[in-house]
Image 1 (tube, rainbow, N blue to C red):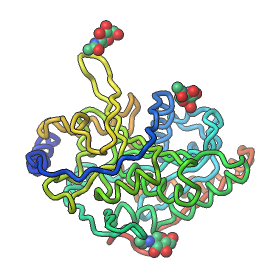
Image 2 (spheres, helix red, strand yellow; image 1 turned 135 degrees about the horizontal axis):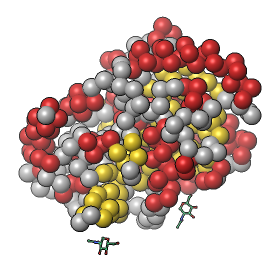
Image 3 (cartoon, protein in one colour; image 1 turned 60 degrees about the horizontal axis):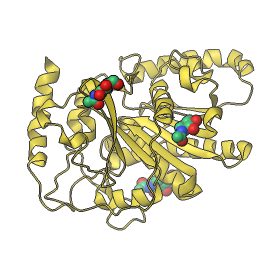
Amino acid sequence: MGRWRFTGVVALILLLSAASHGRELPVKKSGQSFVYNHTLAKSLVEYASAVYMTDLTALYTWTCSRCNDLTQGFEMRSLIVDVENCLQAFVGVAHNLNSIVVAIRGTQENSVQNWIKDLIWKQLDLSYPNMPNAKVHSGFFSSYNNTILRLAITSAVRKARKSYGNINVIVTGHSMGGAMASFCALDLAMKLGSDSVQLMTFGQPRVGNAAFASYFAKYVPNTIRVTHGHDIVPHLPPYFSFLPQLTYHHFPREVWVHDSEGNTTEQICDNSGEDPKCCRCISMFSLSIQDHFTYLGVDMEADDWSTCRIIGAQSVKKFYKELTSNIIMAKHNVDVSIVEPSKQRDLSSFR
Ligand SMILES: *[C@@H]1O[C@H](CO)[C@@H](O)[C@H](O)[C@H]1NC(C)=O
Ligand SMILES: *[C@@H]1O[C@H](CO)[C@@H](O)[C@H](O)[C@H]1NC(C)=O
Ligand SMILES: *[C@@H]1O[C@H](CO)[C@@H](O)[C@H](O)[C@H]1NC(C)=O
């Protein structure tokens, strides 16, 4: 199988990082420990799964095939689509959680394998603004900061908090969507205060260095980073502990979901961000892509694997046609922000 050969190549590079048990740069411990709640995780993984759906009308009216179960009654407030950069997100109110939920979609390219292979070479090439020594990958950061996402999400959150009082914001996403969700949560926490923002991501890659992880733990203490079994993505870009200043470093707190002796365990990891007893204990040669596509039993793949651009454009066109009738269906005004290819600058250089 192609997948196995692919995993072998990645494993070879990761072997280097596994062999390196040198000096580790500890992430500054933050005082309080945020409690992992399985029921909440189950709801949020359903939101992170729903944001992959390509039928915008069904998403907008919250009638998609994944728009049920624990997410029933979700009040969609803003649907955000960036066709050129293949980004999709929504903001709304989950009344049963008394929270605003922000969900950001992961990569929806026809080759997730290529995307994962590229992750190995991502450089820490951007100094995070106003955080001395904190470095991040510019592509992950720019996909949030320098696209429609930042403006559309922050404005939708502000409006929702105006309508419902200053309720909490929970940000979620899977894979690349988890990376963008991290930058979004940090941005919101700096604006609204750390107590108002929670982050829960699923199978996200590393996004910055140890200094960045320390700041992150301070600004967004209510963070859970769920990893699953042998999922390869949380192992990338690689962590080289013999290069503490140069290497990527996860922020806390990981919860590693894995099967042991027939039972599913949700293991709460230490607050270092790189707990060697959690997903890092998996042998580099048994990492897999398969485990990346299911979290807590929920399907995390796009419902259509055609290339993002074509689907995006078709879906958008159809959506515009149907929008008129759906406006009557919605009990409130839903903001729709769509950026089409012709209407924006090229961001491909960030990727
Ligand atoms: C877990 O989260 C659910 C949903 O938000 C909530 O109803 C429940 O009370 C929480 N449980 C604990 C122990 O906090
Ligand atoms: C992030 O976006 C803001 C505008 O939304 C811009 O002023 C700022 O320069 C961006 N930061 C970086 C590091 O690109
Ligand atoms: C797995 O679950 C079964 C039934 O709940 C229990 O009897 C058994 O002890 C569990 N095994 C482990 C290793 O936790």
